[in-house]
Image (cartoon, rainbow, N blue to C red):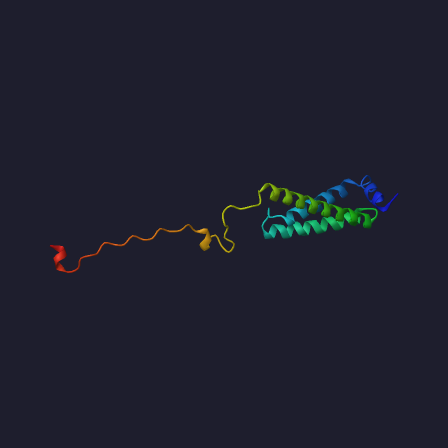
Length: 131
């Protein structure tokens, strides 16, 4: 049996804890890479991913096979993201029709143009005006 066959063969002998750790590692990686969470949430997701990946490698019979499985999972997620991005660009979903302000929502390009002010009528001055 080849090394790759042994790696995939080790999937059948995984315990529930290993499967849970692998799931947490993959889900945490997806959350850490995406924009679903704020910056602090992404840092927590990165920490959970690292802890789960290390725990997965420790719990497995052969840590090199576990490292290879985690590498395949990351490569698979990257391939999925790339295919979705290519498909969305091909269908035109990734193109914005209006310019978006990058610095702030109050940037000049994000505000509508204001109409020119109307000129004021001339004001009379002096006591003749109050008569």
